[in-house]
Image (cartoon, rainbow, N blue to C red; front, side, top):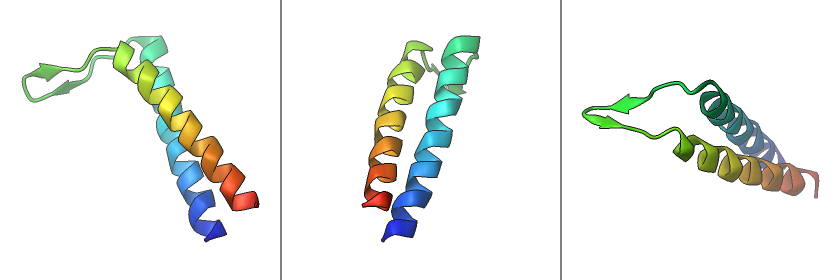
Length: 61
């Protein structure tokens, strides 16, 4: 279980970092006809970071 939590923490951390880079750089992201607003990546970065930190905590305990 510790390896799973550690791997999940890594994945969520990487996703959070990409969301943060997108928010800072202002990259456009389009899914079909829908333009995803940049502020949504700020929320994604916070949620991803929280999940990553939770995974790190669980993998150590």
